[in-house]
Image 1: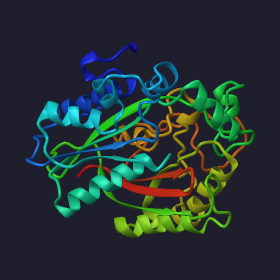
Image 2 (image 1 turned 180 degrees about the vertical axis):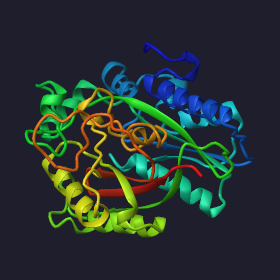
Image 3 (image 1 turned 45 degrees about the vertical axis):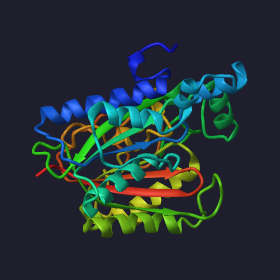
Length: 333
């Protein structure tokens, strides 16, 4: 049995983290005046689920498990047990777009609300896949750093950056049209696909830049209205190049301090599937959680936690394989 969490939430760290984060989000929303509607949906952003259980299934048990244990492996099981716990009857599904999964879930939740499919959405982003095997293969891909201090090797938009540091997390939030004391508003966003390569970004950056333009159009705002860009920023050369370019061309006109890289890739806890969801978790009025500068880099990059006086935020996420995404957030009314 894994350490931590409530055993009643399932036999794995993954299921326990997902349900705990969602439960905490519901409690927080309730304290802020939220009352669930008749149709509450659940969206779960995830890339690799139940890594520990599947390893045990194949390597230790040779597939010889009980029906109950086998059902715990299914991606629907943590969601179904959670919906049963709260008596929610809206749609429940998983969303997966690699590192863009968080944004994909956010945009799907907004689409459900806009279409009248649901009254509220519980949105959770979970990644507990930092097993030795997965870390090894991301290291072989040349994007994960394991042989240096995080801040020495993960420096998004700075010289000497070699990639990101794997971590694990689960983040939950409630999206609703009836929340009287919200943290932020989702104005709009967009997603696209490069249709180019299983790992590399299209070199001319046409689709990722167009995705950001589409997000601004969908939200009904101009690039110059963006006050803060929470970049994907994994610290790889191609992602830094892409985000610096669309920051300058699309969103950054007139703002020298716009490129606010959250840079949690350089800090423990930045998981693959949870990216995007975790970076939106804080209220807009709080300081932006940028990592300290370590080397020469983009002049628009924030340096450490920085006061934020409000305005619009653009959250970009770029998923391996060509998944582009951007979401525009505004302070609550």
